[in-house]
Amino acid sequence: MQPHQREFIAFAIEHGVLRFGEFTLKSGRRSPYFFNAGQFDSGATLAGLGRFYAAAVVSAGVEADMLFGPAYKGIPLVSATAVQLHEQHGRDLPWAFNRKEAKDHGEGGTIVGRPLAGRVLVVDDVITAGTAIREAVEIVGAAGAELAGIVVAIDRQERGRGELSAIQEVELQHGCPVLAIVTLDQVLEHLTETGQHAEHLPALQAYRAEYGTA
Ligand code: OMP
Image (tube, rainbow, N blue to C red):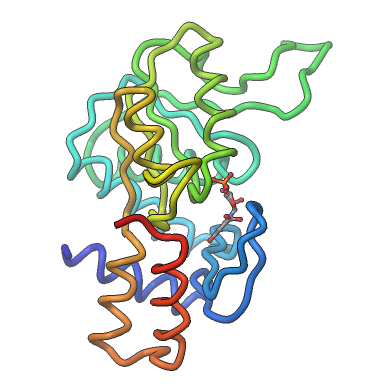
């Protein structure tokens, strides 16, 4: 695990973004943890989050011409990532997000920001079963742009429709990388090493065994 990954887990726990307990996911699964990116709800925490996304993008060496954040949760994530790619790494990439409802007046359309073109890196929060991200991928394809990859905050390492993880399915189907700042295994490693929230480890391990990929 790289130092920025350890820092990210500590940062997410400190700000109540990564929580342990009982949660019902969009897929209907009952999960002993939840990652709520919407909880990075101050200027300082959003700036911090953007730095971690930017570090993940740069350390993976993905070649992209622009960034796209799917509505709604991807919108602050893509803007914070664009700012930090510029501030921390000197990379000034165009960025865009979509509206959920098409606008029929003014400038019209559903894309706000730079029109989607070239190699597009999608910035999103979490991929569990892969439903939300498929919509984002369709938007990129419909614009005639190429998918350069996807970056999310956490890889929950859960099975998608078959035995592969939803992330592995997306990688295979679209032939592009899906990056995550951290994986569930790294979260478990961090909790084991620090003893933080150790009471939740058995439930987390049981969940990993039931829904996780090998
Ligand atoms: P899938 O569409 O099943 O991949 O679920 C992804 C979406 O679930 C994310 O975009 C979130 O809205 C939500 N989610 C979280 O935000 N954090 C989690 O830890 C888990 C989920 C989830 O419901 O699976």
